[in-house]
Length: 298
Image (cartoon, rainbow, N blue to C red):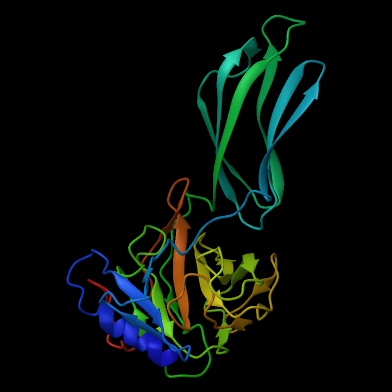
């Protein structure tokens, strides 16, 4: 499997611009999977997707408390990180207490905050309005601090298979400074920086619906977050809310989600304003390329 990942990397080395190549995946009669940049009978096109998708629907939500005709709008944040929220209240009818404007707040971890109190303009008549909530993990007001990341795995040496601005899948705002390190499945993955575990996924097998696969997200003291993706199913050994230090065991590497072969996808992110964005970082030790097929990458 590792050899097939290296073959895919070699194919993408030919990219000379940020435009992604068309890559085909082919399985022969013996079940061997190959990748090629040439159309082949029976092959399917590999379609890369944004690897990191936030799913906070069950952890960040709007609650409306009604008492004697007055509506109090609260947002509850059940995550272990601050969350930036934007509440829009539109289509107002018989409403006092808010205009058709946007309310921005940062809600601390594991807390609720009242954002608006609505009352009837004409007593005895019902209120009518449309609330819309947007949110993103993290506090956009925090500034990243310089940090040199120890290698987040044990064993090796392993090599970089895709670096920053990689043409295959490191071109989105959430992943553009990510690094992929090819390694055998089951390699121990460890924390490269101390922090609090914010989110985990541990139940995906193979190439599931979530392109991230199994992952661990850790919030650092400066508001940045380190994310370890494509982990082996059932291997995540930390829980949300747990504090970890450098070297803490997190999981084992895998090949889940939108993965072209066994590897660790490691990225550092911050909230850039109602959305996660990848930011540059550096490893404390040299990681050689395969060579790296990332256009403009290291």
